[in-house]
Length: 316
Image 1 (cartoon, rainbow, N blue to C red):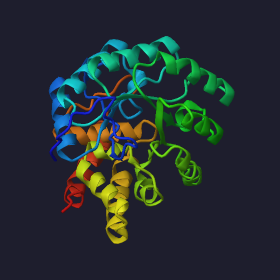
Image 2: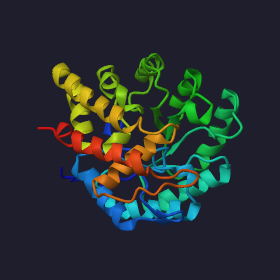
Image 3: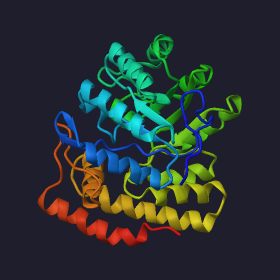
Image 4: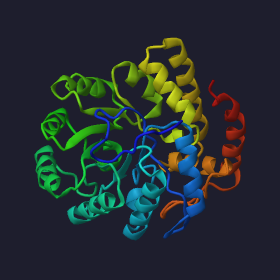
């Protein structure tokens, strides 16, 4: 895929469409990046035709990484991407000033936008969340996407808050990882009030159906591994090719079934993606504490799955 136009915050497509992988963070150790692996991963993703990168999200282990390392990652990613696609940076934090600090680092390094989930330690009510965002927006040097991730933050963005967000010109959209298609559909029906607003799905098991419903794409973890498969699924759904969409969605479900259910704990999805990426020779599978990479039988299961998925994930 060729990228003819450099992207920054002023040329960001509105709405943003396509596959925006939540990029894993290749780590050498607790406080250092696997730099060579990071460079390979970025080119692997861009070569697969993705439409942007989202770094320091859930799959990127953002909240588990030190601030110095986060800033280092932002700088390296932005320099290497060099405007070929938008770079979105996660700034979710329990501390207001640290979220602002990460947003400023993102702007200084040339990122396109920032992404924020609700602060995740002390659950806030919807009026408190709206007031928090009202205070935060003037401090942000880049446009903002919201991130609805109630399973981890313990706070859902209710539809009244989404409606309020649509009235804020500098909030450009939302990634919905609730897994609730009824909620997603109700949010879609609010888009005529803000035609430039982006609404993307998180769970890749719902990628095809969400785009057929009118969604703008997916923030799909498996695209770290098989970017062209997820791009092909998005494109088939967008053009309404139902047979092709059904076939490709089944393949994506197979990726999910084989790689995301190996371990026993919620961290198993990230562990599975990182382990699979190391099987592909892309990068280290070192995990940020308190988590640790798959070893022994778990790694063997991922290796077997990847050898069997390789052919299935190829697209014409």
